Image (tube, rainbow, N blue to C red; front, side, top):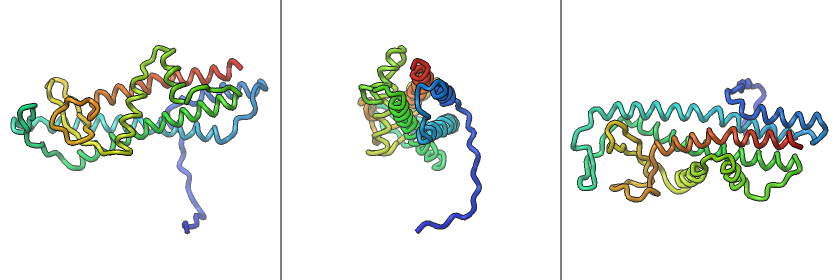
Length: 235
């Protein structure tokens, strides 16, 4: 039986990402014009869930960048015995365990939170279209991909996010290594198993590829936002 809560303090949630606000403005304009019924509170709450996740995501981005910088700083002490090639297995380089697991946790959190935010946006699209008495003929994921294509936006990030998130949530855990092929531009390798070669691109992803996913998501936000605003302004 849960403990009885008789007194509490709410923590204020103002946040910083206003993505949802112009959508609510368009909804309320359609309500005032008598074109739609009042939007249910449940959908407004869904918007709040999306806003909270949008406010969480930059914190995870920032943490990963900071942690990766610290990791690269550690590489200054790497010797030739730690370098691996196709023909030579080097010794694994030891770093601070706290730093290592902070990176692993935040990679996992980033993929989860980003995918979760996309799923909530998909749900919002379905709920708002239904409320406007419009019908989406495709699944929400296909709808978003088609919408992004029409705006000449990249869609590969959407597919890659779903694929990598599914693996790390349901099938495995990340391992990390550092790509030092280009010494001037190291990259974090996020492996799906303890790899000895990197011939199969499905078995790993790079931090630079994660950044492409992040940028794809950022670029998609105004496209989705405009579609939902237009949905109610054009009723």
